[in-house]
Image 1 (cartoon, one colour):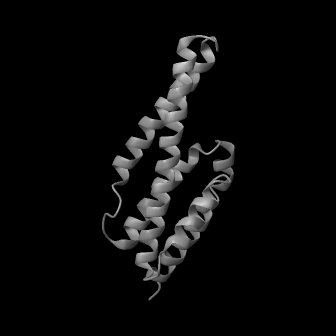
Image 2 (tube, helix red, strand yellow):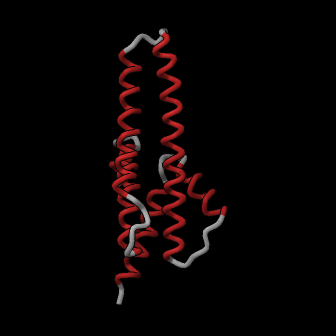
Image 3 (tube, helix red, strand yellow):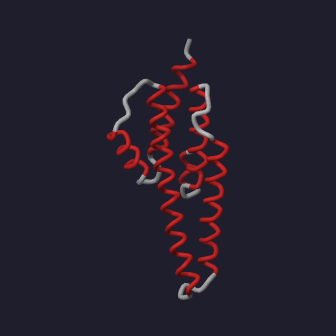
Length: 139
């Protein structure tokens, strides 16, 4: 997954995030995350984002469409990044609750800071999910 994340410039991160949410649902034994809906919302936002990028590169950069398009791309990029941060924090909070662990501001800051340099919080959260999964599977 790590190589795929790097090779797809982060696009695989959205899939990985949904898969981690699915894993937490399975570990918890109930639906903590509506993964199908989240996947559809991410797919729609990513499709719109990529479509705007294609439109941007297919038009002259000095026209009004390009200026509008740049604003739309920037706004959608902020929405996508914010949704990743919020989803990761929510995911980490649910993992901590399953582990009966504390989850405070320091954990939120750590996740956001680790996500900024190219989704480094993903492996951290995946290890936590794996640990919880192993612990819940042990007799």
